[in-house]
Structure formats: structure tokens, C-alpha cells
Length: 397
Image (cartoon, rainbow, N blue to C red; front, top):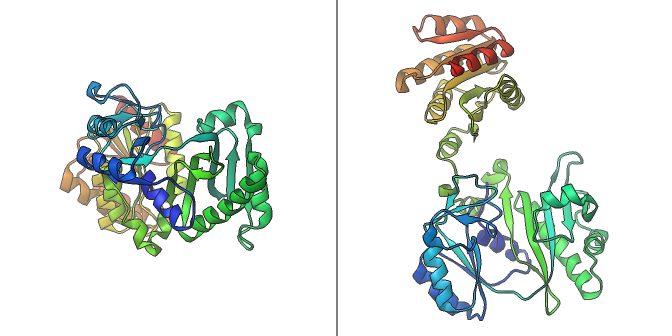
């Protein structure tokens, strides 16, 4: 689960991370009040969307002005003007795609006198099973580009969960950023603070870009991006309360109600599969035969007929779907349950596109019999390769 920048800063501030003063606002009137409360003389007006690249982004509407989604204001009047331009407008960044995202809230923040900018992030390193710090002296830039052009400028080190952050981790962070003296001590404290926040809040990723040194010699988290492990949200009611469903795909929201693992994609073939590995293989083979998947959807090993019906409805609600591939290997999941779920869904929403079903495993013959006797126009497939070729052929015409 993702949250907005201002929410992320509030979370890490609770643990002692240094951040600027700021106010989240939802109207131009609130922006003016927030600017007066903060006092100035410089303010930063930041669009709050779940996407990076806001500063370099552009608004679709000419009325929003030519400046990006992060703007420096030098007066209260300018803060209000920027808020009027940005609220309700659609911001397009490198991470939103051409559709962009509507800006429904802003963050008004004190301006900072910046001496240097760094990059810092934390994530779970699957290879080591540890939380890793990724840091670079090249802050404020696209870290992907830095990794491509100058990988030697990125330093990574992991923390043993048995010990947590130790003094040498703080020294590693300071050394990687070239910090000495009091700044090195601040880096040591920051490493401990962020690690504690990461672990206690079950974060999946924490990114500070840029981490800055101010002119008066203080480290400060000038931006913050946080995502949480969905599987641990049951432990954090305070985190769940931060969820902004307007930033999420409506189909993904519906899928979460049924505990379905669903991710919307940009293709034309809707997929219903059980098991993440099989789902990934299904997406790959669709691409191999020249089409693009419209979604990742794992119904899980113990899905009920109700769950399968909900999954099918979510797939058919996507207007980009030109064909559907159901690919089930029945282990815990039974093929007859899938078959009944598909039939129930088709009866409820109709079937306007080609449907290919590949069943294998537990109760496979019963599942196939149920589909045959349903009277539905279902294209049967013998294996995954056969299923992929058939659905691609059907979609292409």
C-alpha cells in the first residue's frame, strides 16, 4: 500500500526523522491559510499523487501553467495562485503514463536552503533476506539513470535482523555520502531512526530523495516515499487509515475486497490463474505469441465459487479486454469450482469476448464436463501453450 509524501513524512517524523514543517491542503483557501501559518518567506507547493517525477511533470491543462507539480512560491499570493492552478488538474509524469493523475491535494511546505542533495532508500533485499540501505551522492536525480550511467556512485549495505542497526552501519552511511564530524553523527542517528520506522511499520520500501544538507549544516528528509507490506496491514490500523483509494485502480480496489491478487496492466487479454508463478508464466507466454496481458490475477489456491465469480467480473469490467484466458492447475484448487464460478459469472455479466479455458489437476474431467454442458461458447485448451495460441488467435480475429 502506498501513501502520500506528507503522510510518509508524518510517519518517519514520529520516529525522529528530520523533516520540514508543512500542511496538507485540499483547497486554495486552505493553501493561503497554510502559507500564513508557516510564515515563509519561501514555500514549496507540492502535488500529492502516488507517482514520482512530480517536479519534472507537466499538467494537461493549460490553465495549470507550464511549471511542474512541485513549485517554489515567494509570497502567500503565489502559494494561493499555484494551488488554484494545480488542484483538480491532471499531472503527467514519467511514472503516471500518458493518462496522468488528477491532483486532489497539495502539500505546502517551508522552503529549505540546500547545500547538498543525496539519495537514500531502504527496501527488503530478497537475496539476503535483510533490509538494505541504498545510498548515493547523486540525490535529486533519477536513480535509475544514475545506476545505468554511474553505478559506482551507488552504495548498498544490508542490516542483519538479529542485531538491527549497529554503529558501523551509521559509519557506512556517512562514508558513502562523504560526511564527517557532526554530519556523520547525524547520519548515524538517521540510519537508526529510519531502520526502526521501516521494521516497526512493516514497510516494503522507504525512499528519501533528496536527503539534503541545509546551509546551516543539518541533514533533512526533503522528500519521502513509503509503501507498506499489504500482508502486514492487519497489524497497523493507523496505516490503513492513510489509504487514498482515489489513487488506486477501481478494479484493484474491488479485488482487494475478495483477497484477490490483482494488478491492472495495459494489454488486451484478461487472465485468471491460480498461483503467482503460473500467473507470471501465463503473462510471459501471451507476450511470446504477440499479445499483451490486461492484468495479473491470482485467485489463490483455495478460492471459492464466489471468489472466482468476482474475479471474472473484475476482468470483464476492463473495457480494454478483448479476450479472456482462464488457466487453472488444480492442486488445492478444484477444477470443478473454477468451472462453476466461470459459469456463474458469465450468466451474471454476459460474455462478449472470446474465452479460452485450460484446466488441469484435481477434478479436471468434472470441470471440463461442467463447461461442456453449460452451453457457453468456451474454447477448451489442452495445455498452456495451446491455450495461449488459441486466445491470441481469437483476439486477433
